[in-house]
Length: 229
Image (cartoon, rainbow, N blue to C red; front, side):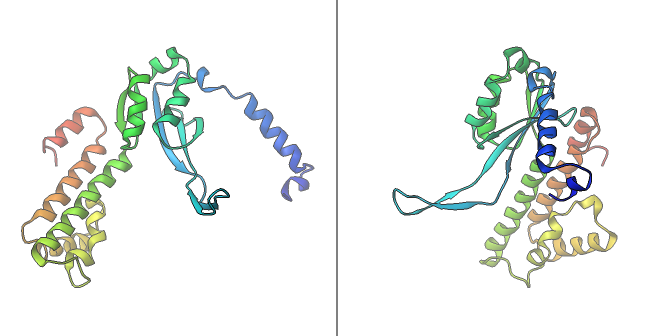
């Protein structure tokens, strides 16, 4: 590190200063957390190591789970792993009164996370984050497109098929499409969607996006019922 020396600092001094600053930060137990976010992250590339006992190679995927205060954005903790045991272990280290204060916990669509959260955060509603829900909608559109191609063409999509050639267009946000892109999308659905199933799946995905962007629950319910579009 060259830049600390320019200001009269050495690398060791910088590290000691950071360590002292981290030591005085309030721990998770001292934060009154009402909305908790739990997510998994991979903090480095997948690596392979040779097993000395067997002589074979072992694949290691370095994952960790982060816990975040959704109201302040503060990171409360990081633990190794990505399973229910990792989440359960961290939550069990928190006092019971702390866990009972949590009212909302946001996770990705993970059965393992939900399994750990439900008994330890008894007063919290479990919510799935926006990004993963939209991804599930896009995945559904892709599956319908692939099924229609197999059912009516007897093969996978090809570059000559409009729905395959413009498959990424189907995954874009409909309300952000330019007039030109929207016209292209309509041409794709008119020319390569014989049963209107792809268009129906796309419409459901877009309705989901609109519900998720609602500013409040009442507006979300209105959009879900199909009014106000």
